[in-house]
Amino acid sequence: MADRQQQQQHGDSHAPDPSTLLHRVQAHAPTSTQIVGLLTLLLAGAALLLLAGLTITGAVVALVFLGPLALLTSPIWVPFALALFVVGFAALSAAGFAVAALAAATWAYRYLTGRHPVGADQVDRARSRIADTASHVKDYARREYGGYLNNRVKDAAPGA
Image 1 (cartoon, rainbow, N blue to C red):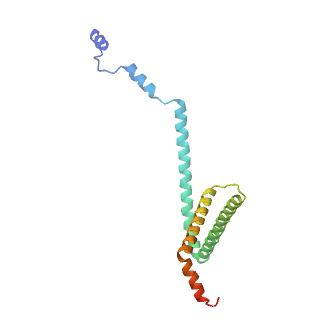
Image 2: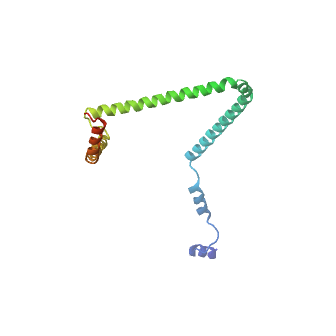
Image 3: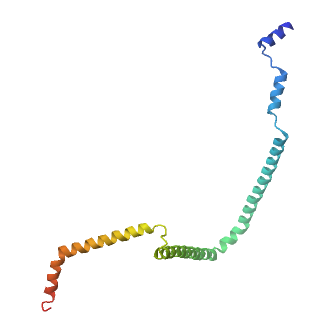
């Protein structure tokens, strides 16, 4: 016995201390809140699994009974679905074009009334570049081809 006490004091014991093991188990034991949460999770999962099974069963039964009916009436449904698709696409396209036209008209109104909408500076820059290019082309044409064109006009109308 003295030997055992001496081993425990020096830490040479290989046998686990029961009080330490019990403390470890109690430290990792779930609380009552965690147990209730787990039970709630399991019940909700079981209910959802049951509902999913009922849904799949209902879909298969409906497919079995309504499949032949859909097959027999498909000559009616296919053109109807195609026409519905075309009408829906046309309506959505018209709505999209109307929104785009309204946005463009609003932007143009703001630009023309001087409210400086987004992108107005880019439009002004592009307009000035186009005007500069047109002026350069006009000057070049007058300088390079002015005499040639004047002579041709006189040739075309000699009496003028």
